[in-house]
Length: 616
Image 1: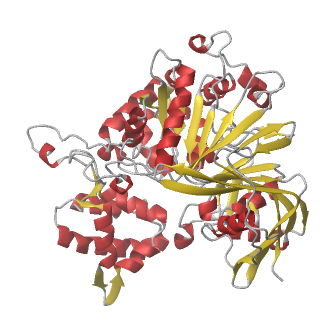
Image 2 (image 1 turned 120 degrees about the vertical axis):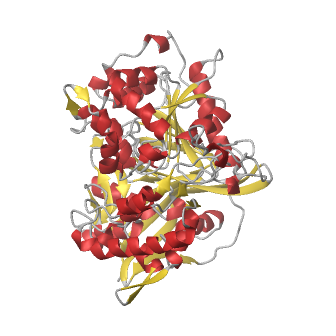
Image 3 (image 1 turned 180 degrees about the vertical axis):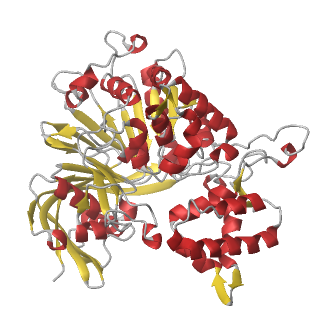
């Protein structure tokens, strides 16, 4: 029997497992990984639209980030060390427009939404030329816009805490699972804690660590997630590991971590600024954590029953847990060792899921996807290069000849906790089928797993005799798209690449699959049955990889007696045509699940075949 341990390197298996968790014949939890596709909607003081009723939180809770246009902060935006000479005009226009906005708001603190509204609606004359705030805002890259907003942000404090008699207290964002409107999001959060409880045992609350390393601002969601998982029944701590922490540990001064340089590392690696001013308490917490070093971090992980990684940018999480030479950090080795022994639950959402890919399976390295859309993936292929920065087309900062939507990946993989295939997220909602298939094709990767929003792929291991290498189950609102390349045929290269006989599966709530020796076996939930719709309409889509068009087209093919559905992904006369069809191995099952007051219709399928070829 091969368990997860088989797929982790010998050096990993040599890592010691703590005595506190090594009970003789301890049973593995039902599932050891909860991989969420993103898109979770939870009631919080910062997202009251997700609440089932109004006025859930007191005025003391943080409801939004706040901004102020003081002279000092505007002067910071003028920093020549940030703006390149080629962007001097955009810098000058941005400052002039914000000076105009300041004349409107004076010293008032405003939300980001209000600041952006005033900025975009401004129109001023500079040297005889009228400048539009809307045009200026749109011309800035994401990197430039984030820099500006970071410089203007101020610490959110309650109004009655701003007196001179006492230090202002930073407002915190709070969550309320009981008042969350989306029952699927609640279900997935509670599932993580439920599995952690299986690891902890019945005598105490499970200990859960929150990692916010994927965020551009790694402090922004700390309060939200710690409060949310406490609401779900866990004892929660923030584990302040991120790319800046890793840089401080590796760049040593007098043989000590360079923790005093954390603000500079945050700017260099995360592209975030002035966090010590916005989150002074969290910065102090990370500074202390940094000075204690990796040994203390490993001990904190050793005592945990679960670890959760947030969404954002998976490349940032990779830098947080791997060293400059690509080897695993001591913290990652501890997680890998505990996961292989069934002693920790590893969960993630969005980027926190995508980063789990890595290691090797069936003799091939498993890559980590890092960027791109389906159209560019099919036109230009996949590049083993760092992902371009969002918006880099605007300021010509894209490197390596890439555009901002080109498909990129890391050939050596991510954290290596999920070796069985590429993981992708926000999947059906963003039409990512094409990019997953092209990445698998270009890297010769057998399996790919695309997880929809508000949906989780549960992953479990076992030491039982003759058990599969891994078992998986789908939980949540939608489904998981699985690509098997075993029978795929290809010809051509670049934009002329033709990929045919791709075997695709779409598993929805309650469906399971197993992998053993490269054989994938799936089972539909027992409450699903063969569709009885006798219609056979002509099915087609003109923009197959836009929004969730692919999912909707496949859903109709699943529910009806039609044998084929056709689509195109074409821009300016260039692109690909796609055929999705049933053959003798295709099976479909439908079912209705009731979640609170909502009925959701699911249609799962096995072996719908896919052909992709250039338009003629």
